[in-house]
Length: 256
Image 1 (tube, rainbow, N blue to C red):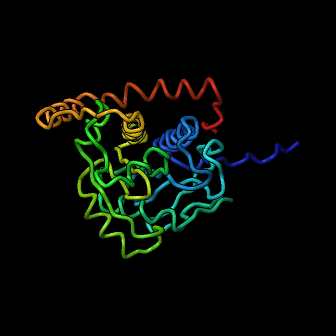
Image 2 (spheres, rainbow, N blue to C red):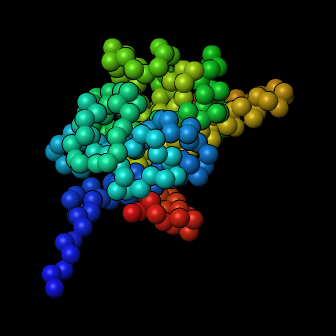
């Protein structure tokens, strides 16, 4: 009796490096949902596929963040065109911001853009993120701002966004949300965790009604450089395995 043909799965079609990137990116989506930072099916986290091609992974449009798996991620080019067969599709307009950052920044291998409540609240404040907490020190060490220009659909906005972002690691999009980049999903997630936490602390401190006590300017620079040295790279590498263990205890299906 002839055995049935083997089903070709996504792991069979991609390199080990790409599969690991897929697993980590799917984990990032699940973690965003777990921490309550998602906005239904909107916003995105993208990751560049290892290799010479400028290919990227993005979530299927219409899939909730807590449903994303490594296999469901869609491989696309810088123009948002699929470069690998997939039953899913993406929102090309949602890739506008990501494609601009990926094209301009070789170090931005993972780009996380979110619409968190606290992040948007701070983005709407004239003075933006304030030096009110240790968490804010990390973000302030590498933070840029981009003014709101409407829905991110206009290709003409890309060069202005790239120019405003420069070589920073964090971007507050005025009246819109937050963005963080990293060399991998672990760095992007940890950066977003600290930025979002800083925004949350700021809103809570302001809502208390008491006089605020900002960190003095002469300390801000010193602490910011210390935070960067401690948290970037090593901090992400140490934190990420624990986050994956947390996910695995809850639901390991993101690995599928």
